[in-house]
Length: 353
Image 1: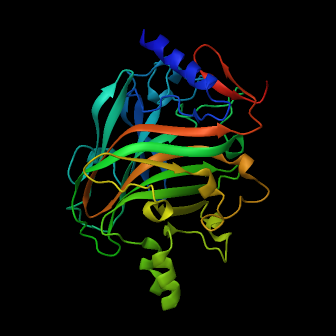
Image 2: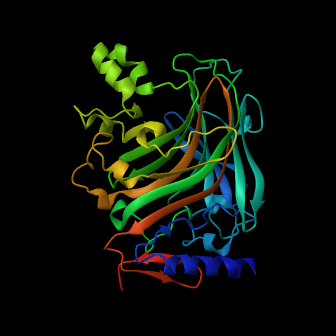
Image 3: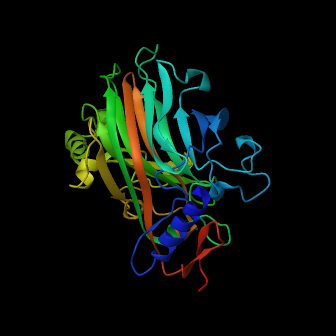
């Protein structure tokens, strides 16, 4: 019965996608199933999938489409629908303090999940070393819908990319690191071009102490007081993109900018102890050359594959718990998408009528 219900919901959303209505590009919006794995990240080290996963609550839409993909997820024929990513933490730090945790507060098995991301860095020997805990929708896993040819959705396939979620800060402590003081939450979207250069744009929705990374090191760069004041007052929280040298971030293989949500939109709701609903349109942010460079030649936005849509808990020397639920990623298909085709289980973008 649960399986039939999931298929019906996908078909209804797909039928309503055209005529100006938005389409949720997540297979399992919410999410509604505890079908995930843990990915461990550290500086200058390749990402590593750990043994921490849950694969007994995976609906049929998450069944793998190739024989080799997701082998590490267990021999049950499924791929994870979402990931928990930690940066700077090891699997041995799970459910410890200092350490990190992922709590499934409620839901699963077809019922919307409420999830807690816990990032406790207070008490570490180096309080200024950055640690992150993220909820992440990802490609090439089965988080995001595809074209009917099995290809990923690109920014050229859509005319809007609206990320919507509800979140709250359930627990926080003042960070012990003072330079830079770090206890903040961002909603990020990452795309990748065929030359493996990634563009990341994030929007800040919690910022303990109202710090501004873009201006905190301004004097270190021999900037004038006027230049530093301008950085303090603009909407950019952090960036590695230099408008005067747009190719500089290409050398790092990643161009990244995080924006102050409250300066970006009057409708932004900074998180507190009660759930706040936020909604941000990311396609226009990617294409704003104040925030990120033009696509690396010879590519265009049509070549930019969406790889990560994630809520990130960042901490240096402080404790921070963020609860999240009701996540959706809505888009309007571009003129290159003529229809939505369904195979009885999944529905896909199609360039054919």
